[in-house]
Each structure stands twice: as C-alpha cells, then as structure tokens.
Amino acid sequence: MDSLITAAARALAAGDPLGALKRVALRDDAPGLALRGIAMAQLGDLVRAKALLRRAARAFGPKEAVARARCVVAEADVALAARDLGWPATALDAARATLAEHGDRVNAAYARYLEARRLLLIGRIDEAERALAELDPVAFPPASRIVHELVVAGIAMRRLRTKAAGAALARAARAARAARIPALTAEVERACLVLNTPAARLMASGEERLLLLEEVEALLASNAFVVDACRHVVRDAGTVVSLATRPVLFALARALGEAWPGDVPRDTLVARAFGSKLADESHRARLRVEVGRLRTVLRTLAVVSATKRGFALAPHRAREVVVLTRPVEEEHAAVLAFLADGESWSSSALALALGTSQRTVQRALDSLAATGKVQALGRGRARRWTTPPVPGFTTTLLLPAPLPID
Image (cartoon, rainbow, N blue to C red; front, side, top):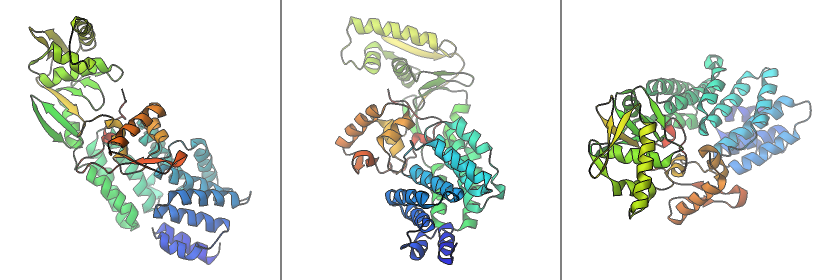
C-alpha cells in the first residue's frame, strides 16, 4: 500500500474525509475508490459513496478477499445511514466471516454492530441483543467502543432501562473524548439528549403532563393501572394484556381509562370505538358485544361495569388509572415517529420497520405530504421521505417496540 493510500486511510480513521480526498480524489484504483467511497459517506453523499464502494469491490482481485469484504461492510454502513433496510444481510454475514477468518477482528466486529443496529431499527430487540452479546469491546479502539455503547444504550432505551442506558452513554462519551472524532462525538451528544426530552404524555383524572423516559420506566414499574397507547396494551404491576390486534377493544379501554373514576356515555363510546357520530340501536347492540369482549380480556385486571348512562372501569388492585400516549398524537403518527429521527427513509424501509405493507405506508406518506408534514426527495427507487423532528420531543422509537398501523 503506497503512502497516499496510507495517509488517506489514517485521515478517515481520524474523521477527516476532506483530508483523505485531498490524497485520493483522482485515484481510480481499487484502494483509492474504496477510500473515496468512505470519504463521500462521511461527507453525507451516500449515493456517490455507494457507487464508489461497489466499483472498488469489483476492482479488487480474486486474491483480495479481505479488501472486498471491507467494501461490503462499508456499503452496508452506507445503506444503514440511508435507511435502506432491505440490503442483503447474508452478504454482510459472509463479509464478517471472511474478515474474522483473516484476523481482521475490528472490522468483523463492526459488521456485527451494523447487523445489531439494523435489527434495533426494525424492532427485533432480542436478536439485536444476541448479536451484541457475542462482542467484547474492551480490546477494540475507541471508535468501535463508541458504536458498541450506542447500540447498548439503544437496546436499554427500548427496554426502558434508563440507568443502563445512561451508563452506556457515559462510557460512549469517554470513548468519544479518546477518539476525538467530531461526527461520533456529535452522535453521542444527540443520544444523551434523548434521556432529557419528553418521551410520552400522561393522562390521568382529566389532567395531562409530559414524561421523560425515566418517568415512563417508573410509571410502568408502579402499581398503577396503565392503558398504554404507545404499545396498545393494558397493564398493572403484575399483568400485561395486549390489545395491539384488537383496535376496537383498545379504543374502549382508552376511553374508559381517560374518564376514570367517572363513566363514559354510550354515545361517546360508540364514537370512539366505531367512528360513528350518530349512535342507533345497531351501534348500541354492537357496543354491548364489544364491551362484553373487553370484560373477558380484562377480567384479571379490572371490572367493566354498566352505569345509567354508559360504562365505567374499576381496577382490581390498582388505586389509580392512567393513560400513556405519544407526546404528539395525530393521524399516521407511527410513520412520523420514524421520520422524526431526521434521517431520510424509503417507503420500503418504513414498511419493514412498521411491519406493514409498503402500499399502506405509501398512502400514509401521500396523506402527510398533502398537508406539508413530510417531503419527498428523489424519484423512483431513489425516493426518500423526511421531515424535521418535532422540537423538544424524542421519537417514540425509544419505546420498547414499533407501533402497528391499524
């Protein structure tokens, strides 16, 4: 490897893409293409970075398996930054195996981190945790330790373990000071801000207030009866009942939770559960059926009793009923929650993360675009969607699972 390639590689490792480009901007050999691709990725030109890395992978000879594997890992990193979550995980796994076989432990570990970060983005938290458990960051350089701790913190936040998340972010901050790479330092600082911005909204006895992630954790560990509109479950200290696939029952549970300790008129319940402004006898009959089903699924947690004008909720053990919601609620809020990270997403990546069809996501995006809440960049397969984050609020991705679109 010649001196210019060595100097460019060192500049990239130090977070200086412009310094690297000064040395290899005119190089079209395989190492030069690879370093140019990484530099363009660090500068934010992900389309050009992807093209350069693919050219570099093709330019390396058959005996340069390690170099080709590094290009595959770098391309996967670019794909993750571009929120292209459909890139082939098998190719990344093969590249990781090649790097490990040839003794490149640092880049093999980075491939595993990319896998864990992708799994975390699409809500497969257990798999991300298993991938991370195979790595010991102690022997890695500071930059790799930063990535490790950020993934650890992300998993802890999704599981509502704020102390573990804070400890991981503190370790990441120490590694960032040692690495002295501005981009990684900024990423750690952004992650730290998440713990100090509202993550949810609490509704109780007619009053509302915003909660930090730490307060959400404390609430779910308390003895309160919680109607959780972030994950569509109902819980108390000992039991969790999921209503994620039963939107009518959850709408009834939420209406009753918001009104506790009072009752809810039948016409109001009809409107909340069925979306009908006028309640006739058929609606009231259907309401009785759905309330009966709600009684059945909540029988271990509470009683749903009839009153003169409607129905009321009475928990068995808890002395307080609260409703936990997103900080901002509106139509297609789940799509907006993913876009609130400030990155540009494709509709296919959003569909994968949300666990729904791409057509459903596209309809939601078209509706949001019509009101100016999101904007499209590019055309065809290169089209990406983005929106500015809501000031002062953290994304609901920090809650334990991605939310279904009903």
